[in-house]
Length: 132
Image (cartoon, rainbow, N blue to C red):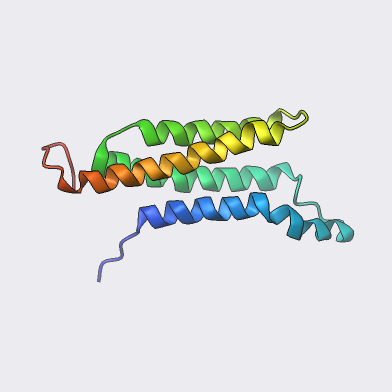
């Protein structure tokens, strides 16, 4: 029996986990500060989460690019979203989360949707450079 990874499901799941962390995580974890634990504004926690999201999302999109559709657009949008997330970590001003996170999330979601669309459209690809 051969084990096969569903890259689309993995990428979408990672994006969903990231969205939950960004939206609900601070509400749930704010109580930890009562015990002296500060995970919300911890740079290392954010770097680990961003690194994990970059590795999982990048691998997912690279797989679609390399094996199916050969279109760079999803990778560019994903990279733009990740850069915006990194900028949010290092550039702080009023409403910086709104300026960086909202477009970053939008770019990453768009990247995954485009990757999935290109993947579905490539199912009938007969070009000799396609590897299906």
